[in-house]
Length: 411
Image 1 (cartoon, one colour):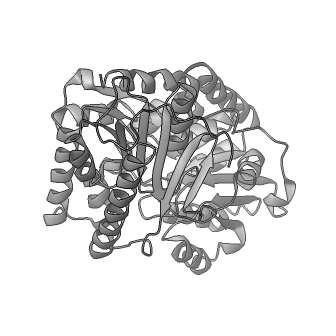
Image 2 (cartoon, helix red, strand yellow; image 1 turned 180 degrees about the vertical axis):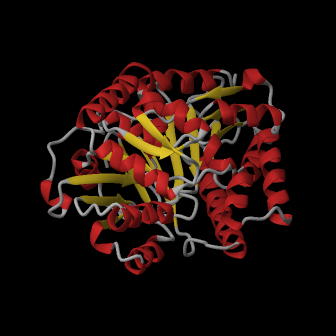
């Protein structure tokens, strides 16, 4: 345990808040902390600003301790069932998570105490706990990470009862929130137009990268697998991430364009990882693709620093079009040129640091990748533009004040 500050709250065993609210409970269900980089940046920023911060999150690979203190952040972790892959599975997973989140929230309330609950979706169910604690004078801040109705539609390709339920849960979450924070302007519009929130209660806090973490390193040549070029990817191996389209592009590059000089390094874990490995074998491109699974930061940075070009194959759909992808920011922070499909927020983030393929067109993605691989001058120029954009506009240090403004608006 490191950096444990003194408890500055008063009346830790009481549910009523003190006059000066400085105690925060963050609940995140999607990823363990500190692996969830956005949540970790928020938590450490709040600690630096004088808040006492507790976090409830699930256990995950490398983060299996039930109780831990890191950099002054008190972390409470709970078990979850196996990661869900269907509507019934999601219902079971979310129900189990909600149960443990409530149990641990009560434990924190009666122990360290908290005055503000900061809920991070997905899913849009944590408002139930927020509503309960609002009865005791707590404030509820909603951190809008994903637009779940669009996510459901993307995963299951239908607008049924569960889609309508997603819309209702989202609406109830916004109605419960005293303040919400959005990752971009598209999400802010959803909070106002679909969620009914007042514009002055919605703050944009982008997931800007921390340049202290994203260090530029010399290339690790063995990652090229003996080939001249490396295309890098980091992210979740899920259905909406478009990795199958990237593999189709790899097949076109290898067999239609006859390019045997490009290796693809794909970093990340997820429910589709084994299926994607099998897809690569069936497409006869497995030798050209390295799937690392989830790895420590150092190995991720080695892959991206070695890459000549980085790729974002996220499928063009209503969710991805409105979402800001952390991977884009990380590529730019490392000075890497990017190829991605044409997406509204993708272009907002990357601007001229990226080439844009026709939506969901694997052949055009392949052509844009080879075009950029073969133009070292353009690669250098685009990478420098992206890095400068992060340094001057999008780094986390520019977003941290917006987070603190959202907290100030609670009182």
